[in-house]
Length: 365
Image 1: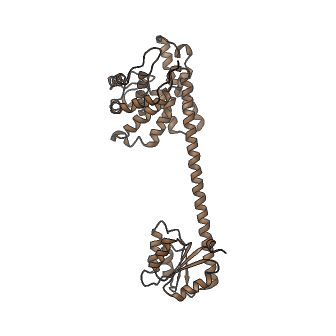
Image 2 (image 1 turned 90 degrees about the vertical axis):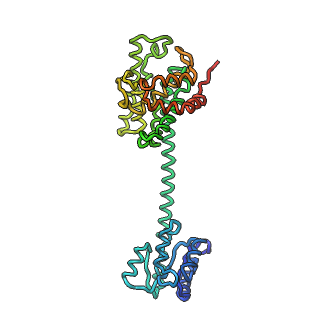
């Protein structure tokens, strides 16, 4: 067999005669390296990690037990199989060696046949473990890739569903993309506060942002004569328009029921669709919730949605400037909006303006 394809055995023993015996037994099948003390052994291992180590216990500088302990304490060498090859034949000696992490314990004088078989078996076992480890790494990589693809697909589906609802109102343009970014930005900044640090973990923020496109999914249930009406709505028409929060909530509940388990992004989607029109002072709809009874995700969405509506042109209003829109959000502090969220919004208003500019609507001629 070509030496390049042979497994490498490192024999560590302070007696040259013992080294020669090992070489005589194993050299035909393996590349055998030798070290007469632990210091030399570690230098050899540093240059080229062997596939297996045959280790004497009684050596003058560092004994075999200590060598094995150091090998097993290091991430780079802990997986190298160590076989003690020693004259110490007491049960307590063997027990100590195995407890330190050695895979086998052979007493001198050695039997060539036994040494060859045990070395072969432990190398085969090590090769099997390495192969299994590589397979596990490949599987983990594939699982991560598949999970990412599913997450990407989930994102696309959420945006597509939201866009379906918004498509019935052609003036909304990039409203979905902007509000999604607003929600993510506001949640990230809130996470810096002690009050929300424990709750707003990255996975929660991601789920909230992923859910944001569904905030007005219930509009698909509103008649065109109301949804697309260019003028003011009558009292009855407005009451029907408010039902879009209920329609959206019911639709997401139905979708969630088909999964037979709760998923964060659907939980937040329900909260956002149902409650983002609630107001801090209790004057919102559909339930008239107030204060922190309104889910946090919905309170965040409320600011994102209203800010975007203010800066955007509609058939019933012109687009307000960023400064005017920020001022109107401030005026709603403590009445329409959560005061703490408004403060964070104001402190990061420039980020909202940048998002609005990046995803601004392109007006057709």
